[in-house]
Image (tube, rainbow, N blue to C red; front, side, top):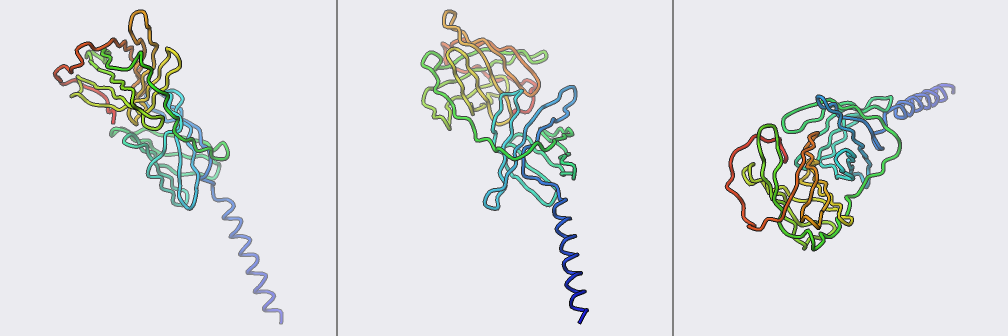
Amino acid sequence: MRQPIVVVCLFVASSAMWCNGEGQRPSISGQWEGAVQIPVYELRVVIDLAQTDHKWIGSLTAPQFGVKGAPLTDVAIHESEVGFGLKGAATFKGRVETEGVLKGEYTQGGNTAPFLLKRLGEAHVELPEPSTPVSKEVQGEWKGAFQLLNSKINVILKLPGDGTPTAPAGELLVIDWGNAKIPVTLWKQDGNSIFALLGDSGMSYEGTFHKDSTEIAGTLRISFLELPLSLHPDTTATSAPARPAAHPDTK
């Protein structure tokens, strides 16, 4: 008569051990903060990962580039292994450790760098910011050039006024990069202050519109580079012939 009791006790004990083991499994859902250790530069990021209806979603915030709530793509979770990316830009692959640390490798444009993130708490997946309208004063085409190493890179910023909060209109035409077209994915304008997020790789332009001189003076950011760029109305509204120039990956 004692044998069934022993069997039940063993079952309860093994169940408790299994539950404890599950409880020790590191939580992947949550908010993670840390940095990618790019050579001579530290890219600070906040990653939010959450599971809804058996599907993983997430967002990335990179304050240094004005990126907030960029949606993650290809989120793949298998036990402690984590992988996700940014559309057309970069990928993160790593492993969650028991102490709430996510370590792995960041890859962009064929280059890799280690990253380390620590779990802060519950996830707060950011939704993409809505864009503001392009004011009539800055609608049109603006031309300028920035210096990259020994090359002068000519650009035209096209700003039509028919965009929407979720789909801003406009693009940056980089003439000396084979007339590459980089779409405006976020447009923010507060009075004479403007901010444009370009493409999906964190490239951005921030400046001030000077009505008296009809100029937008600002800074173009490409990865960790900050490049002065002043823009003036393009009276010709035509593109110069493309000529080759070395440039970083912007896709």
